[in-house]
Image 1 (cartoon, rainbow, N blue to C red):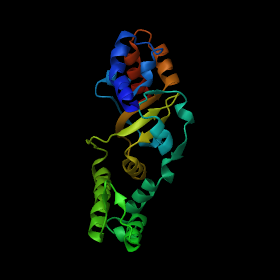
Image 2: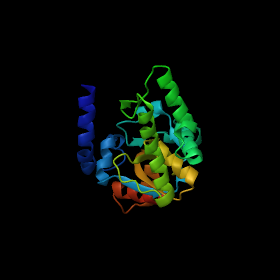
Image 3: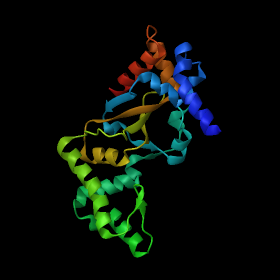
Image 4: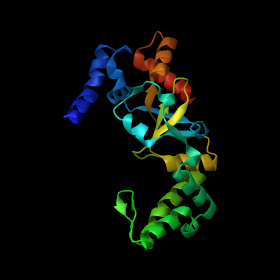
Length: 225
């Protein structure tokens, strides 16, 4: 029943906000409010600005939300401390030699212990599958190295904007973000999916002639730039 109610609220949020667009409308708290922005709040920004990722438990609690109170204060970890960053460090160092990497050694140890690891929705049961899994990340790293960030899939990095415009990674793309850091890329793309309520309030105050969605979009674009 809770899921049905949540889905109904998400679907009704855009309708409610068209009738009452002010930030006092509680529908702004729903992720359904993001539908007012068409294809989403897509941004291009310098990955060096994204140094923290919201911890998994806190990110899970944000599901279904758009405007968030106290986004800056949520538990978050440095991107450089994530295991995904270590994976990409080893790829940068060892290239195709997956056996030399910590990821490869961990996967081999799991097989040796009789505990096939479950990754990316499937079990890895032999060395050929380890190599295929590893090569997926190696290919991604080499593509970013040679061509820059050109992601066009469905799993865009999801960012949050703090009260003063600080950017935090909410979910998805931790390997891509780590690779961008290591390679020194100047730009990545993603979607802003969570916004601190104080940021939205400031954006609306700065653009009195615009509708609330227009003011938020303008504020997001300025923050990303």
